[in-house]
Image 1 (cartoon, one colour):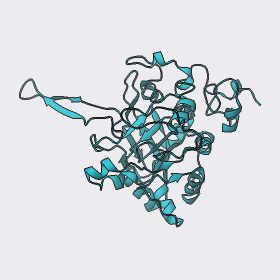
Image 2 (tube, one colour; image 1 turned 45 degrees about the vertical axis):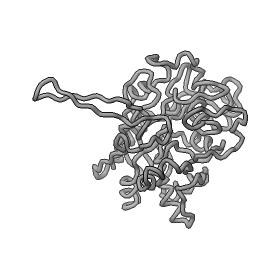
Image 3 (cartoon, rainbow, N blue to C red; image 1 turned 180 degrees about the vertical axis):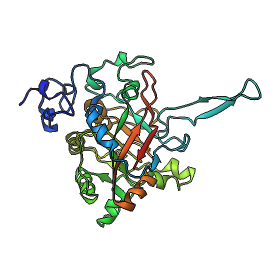
Image 4 (spheres, helix red, strand yellow; image 1 turned 120 degrees about the vertical axis):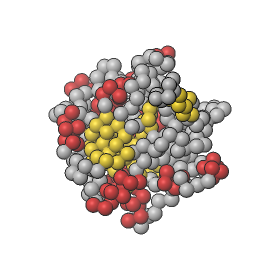
Length: 339
């Protein structure tokens, strides 16, 4: 096998290291990208978004339509994670002609957001790149969301409209269940939309879950635990890695299906947390901690999906700007699509 030193540069002529090779490596945890992007890397798969990919994405703008991909704060109350209080907005003034404001209970992942690389550690291998637990604290820079903010996220977005695709092929998708979406479904959606993936793509997945959620009463929101999404499997990880995506985001709470589909990742001896949901068996662990893939959750995709369906163009320029908060675990996405 070619040495990984010669495959570390992304966006040029270097050979891509296939996911199956990551599973066989002996210089880093199996299935991890820790040795792919260079010593000390803390951006993970965001490295796939090269300057060339960004420049190419800028040429996708045709109509100038701009779509806000963020929901307002406090859209998701009660908390879909079970651990976040509503945000409180306060306004004050020091004279009749002045206004200023601040927020209390501002949970950075309570609405449309991006999970950074310190959000999840792997139970066996720890945080991405082997960053020690003691370095993941308030104010410390390691794996903080400020790294994505300083770099910026600007590239080609592609929308895989799972709901429309599944309806079109006679397999309607039930968003009230945890029906899994597989790598074959992702390939099928790409083909149905006449899309080809490119290195650095920001992949948006529309399941239609938020649109359904917003029609529910508060009691229904609190009671309904099943959510649609990607299946927890090595094939899903392989698809995301081998397509060289830079970020994946969806209009659900975690990108993946909940409750999880156990493909050998669930540890029967892992304790259930006293509050909030367990991450036992979740795709989050290998995706974030091993591959270095940041995940976007609760993105607003309905209007964008309608526009894409109207002219069958499912690619666009996408920008996202996380907060420049040193040591931040996650951040509001501040995302826009420009067609």
